[in-house]
Length: 81
Image (tube, rainbow, N blue to C red):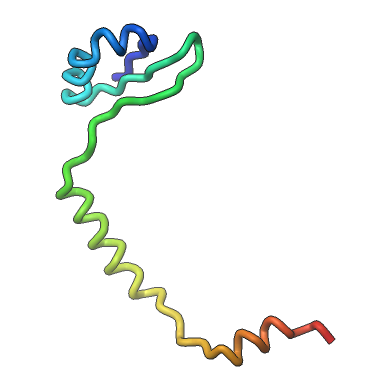
């Protein structure tokens, strides 16, 4: 669930809003009728570490062969004649 509050209410009731965020609610803070910030619960570090490990494992599939400086220069100059 998402709730929307004005800046003044957020300032006055920050502790209450953070308690709601801890339960999984998102809080949008707006100035006038324009949303300017969002408070949301931070995922547990364990999930972040797992995601990083999956990314590292997957990127090994996409390793490219080493390229020499001469090859790069040749590609750069290709078609410049």
